Every structure is written in structure tokens, then in C-alpha cells.
Length: 242
Image (cartoon, rainbow, N blue to C red; front, side, top):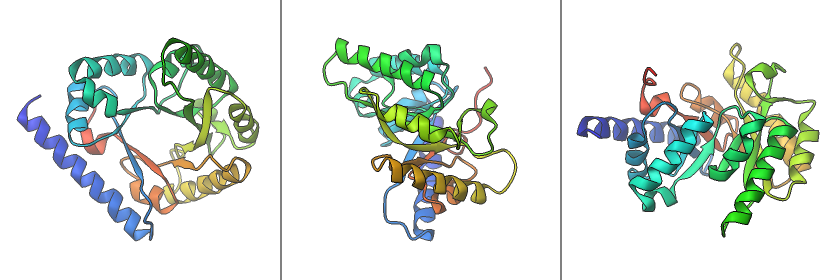
């Protein structure tokens, strides 16, 4: 990694952390907000440098790319790799869910019983194969507008999916994730999602996480109560052409 790239990442990361802190202060919040740095299409050398800068949550959208980066980071620096928490934030095909459960430390995008069952099988297998494997924290992805083609479960089907996940032995229902619709006011969308997240917590009190907000809407998401923002472009810049 060049010194230029290292300096660029350090500056962008510092700016994003300042945005998060300023948004928390503006919202009158003193609790922490997780910063998941999404590294889709960027090389593992970027992940390595970010980890050296103290990033502990790394997000990936693509199953095969993520699995390769997990292995490559461990080969490059086992100590740093052990400190990184890998977050799957993208759509998961049900036939790949079991593989995701083998490397992911948290999954944000569960939107069906098939995906949940695949994660359950994969996590059970991982627990049989190695010591220290704990239940996998998962968030349910909500489709606010009911257009499930972009991923997510409808609000009508969310309670049943939550109950199903809560009954699985190798998963832990951690909360709600939302990607707002492409049109409309992001602040209004996040406020709507926050109400759904609150209803989920009333039904499942341990489901306290609310993953909302990306590079362009960090402030609106944190104002609505987001406990986790997923940021790619603001830190890593435009994605490389692949």
C-alpha cells in the first residue's frame, strides 16, 4: 500500500468519525454508534490499513469476495485479523447462507426463513468443527416500501420472521437493518424504520441494534436512533472498476 493511499484513508476515516460524533452530539446522544466500513471491491490492503487505524467493523456485500478477504487478512496479519469483526451487509442467496455463517461475525441482511435456516446450518457446522463458536448475531432487513426486489422483509411479515430466528439455537436475533427507499425524505424513512425497530424490541427485548445510514445520510440515521452506520464511499472513495 502506498503512503498516499494510507494517508487518504486515514483522513477520510477521521472525517467520517467526526461526522458520527457531531451527529450524536446534535441528537443529544451519549451512546456509541458502530461504524462499519464497507470495503466492497476494494483490496484487502485497504482493510489491513483500516484495521491498523483502529477500525474493528468491516462490511462486505458479496459472499465470495468476503470469504477471500477474510482468509487474506488472516494470512497478512493474524493479530489484526483476530480483532476485526466481519459484517455481511448485502443480500444473501439462501444456498450461500451456510457458507456466510462460517466467516461472518454479524449479519445485517436476513430477510427470509430460508436465509435464516441456512445460516443456522452453517453456524451449527462451524460449532461442531471448532471451539469458541458462539451464536451468530443477525439483524432482519426491513423493506420499508414493500419492494422486496431490493432485499428485505415486509413489515407485515417481520414479526413471524423475528419469532422464527429467535427460536434458532445457533443464531441470536440482534435487531433491525434498513436501506431506505430510493425516493422520498431519508429522515422520514429512518423515523418510520425506528418505530418498526421499537416494536421489534418490545416483542424481543434483546433485539436492540438498529443498523441504518450510509455515506450520504449518516446524520439523519443517527438522529433517528441508528446504532450502526454502514459507510463505504465516504471512507474508501469510489469503487474500483472491476
